[in-house]
Length: 515
Image (cartoon, rainbow, N blue to C red; front, side, top):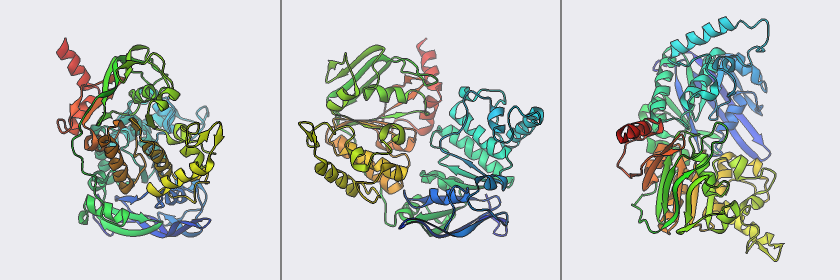
């Protein structure tokens, strides 16, 4: 990491201001990044981080201020100029073509793939040298669809390095990685930093910020409110700086499990494309208990969530609700049975973009009292309910009539959480419930899930964040390729031990022992 204050400044943002109507998203923000340095950019939802990055990449034009890369002014509103200047970005959600090879993905966009001027041999040589230099080993001819999540992230980083990026922006880079893959990523970054790469690191995982960063910059309500060397802060200080007040995680007492509300017995579901189905899964959801489901994204979590939400039914095995077998199952039946869903994809399955907040707040209950009687809608009651959610869950918006597509992802998530938790459900399917939320909102949501558990709800918490799983869960299962591990009591396993199961090795050892 950089320790030389005289190192070259490679990126400078000077007094960046951006307004959207009356909203000031960035208010005279200035920052700099030096060669071989890692800075962490932190802030609450709506603090202005995404807007600032969009200005850097030319997707927005600043109302005031300018951007310099390697001492040269960056033309505003020109994404290609940022790439040409040596700025690369690895997004939280990968932008790779599964049906193409690693090499084809890496060179895609640099030249037409069928161009007679494209020298694939030279491209392969350059890719292999980058992989060797930075410790990012992956086979150039492998189809991306066959790669693990960690390998796909290597490809995303190689894409940026292939384009000669000297400044790398990492947006939530560990969100879908196992602990071992996160360690590998950080080892790669440290090697690249020694070779002169500079990094802007964005993450809600404060222990990772502490592990990889040289400096941390805090945005709050669009303003840069703090800048600290990482050696002078701890996680608690960072959380307080982000929120502007002391922040503490909710205290987690052991749950008091009651009756089994839902049971799966040797359930199998078919695969869907590249996504595996469930493979002989048995699971019990008890009243008053949080069951945590850990796993790398795309290993059957979607099938389990769809099953509980009524979108699919078992192909084999038995599914019970209150000890009664479910022979017919649908989303309507799930809602009427008191099952509430926090869906993984808030854009695709959690909200309707062109609906306003009120319409989205009652999406699953609009046909029921008090919102509907004899086919007539009570919009006044629906709007009052929405205002309660906005106030209670700090949904930052102009009001209940706002189109939900105009909200940030974090504020969309808060509306969905309010919609779910305020309904007093018996079973809560919490699929990535705090994805994209700041530390204050995360603590609030965790507190609400614990309160629902203590009121007697059964909670299935699906998360790729092991810290979240280990903090909240009374019982932890790991899912890998549709297989479910045994249940582990809180505190009985380490993150590394869970990572072994997430990588599939635990299942292999279990099978070998059984034989």
